[in-house]
Length: 478
Image 1: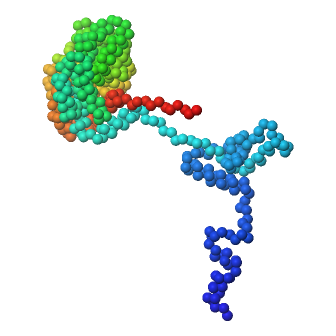
Image 2: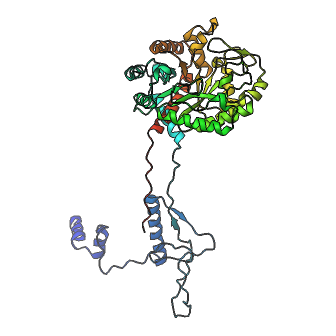
Image 3: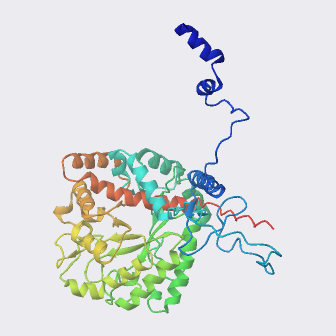
């Protein structure tokens, strides 16, 4: 009798070729005498390899297979990959009779895929999108106090660059208003002064000036024609004058010109008459558009004084002019010059301290209704700035004697920049505005909306001041 252990030993040591083959590791080479039956026709094995390679390429490169349309016969290329229709056709002169090249047999079954590379492309963000993205990121990093401070544009007396820089660094307003006391004697000195006021933090400093020409000019070098004569000359004269004025402003480092009068009046007794560019809607519109187009790309044009001084008698520097003009008449007579300036590309509109009773009993500068007209009916999406808010305090109307209340009302109305013709105690004003937000008098969203428009304009300015050099594309290799 053979024991169980002896049986196992025989099986392992010499128990026959069949048993050894059974326990041989799968990765061991087959004995020479062993033959493996073919796993199918060569063509189908080749197609399997092609498909595997193809889908591997798809995973690595993003290529997309294109299957030939029904009825189109695909032939196999020498590499085993499918070829495009006609790629395997015999050359001219070849025959089917055995002489010349014999075309390969037509493929049967599922045609091999043909692969075409498709590069993933994404549209580059536009300049406006990049500006907004930067402004949104900057806004998200700011405190409420910083956001509120950025809504103020103030005047700081004198031409001492150290004093001006100190105020900017310590208060971070949205911009500065330069008046006669800020402007040195020569254009070169003015340029040197303004250069010290710009920063390197990705936002330009809005440096504004009233440079209408004529009776309202801060720069001594501005001897160019102004509205008093331009209103009676061809439109080209306005283009020429404002082109020269814009060049001067750009050379002196001014970035905002509160200098395009869009008011219209034919009344010589009106305090604004000498400054208007036209005595009727059509004439004023043509010249306002010409002035804005001449300044585009050099300085930010500002249309003033919305909704128009022409119909409201009185000087808003010392009073609160009012009118009962019907809204439809305003649309026909006073709105067109503002619309023309907006359509020409003006990025800023200044609100006047004027009462149009047909729309609101409050001054337009503090009127949400008038801001809605500007945004929705005239389609303006730029920055809105008040006229000097100290003028409201000087109007003699008790309701507008409180500085903080006026600022709160101006923000709630829809203004983005609050203008002050004085060295404002900005920390105190900012603290009062923060308290107004915390007390529910102003929503923080309103602050954010205004600050975002201001930051976007300042980012646009910075990009103008720091243009990215254009690198020419390399010439194609020959």
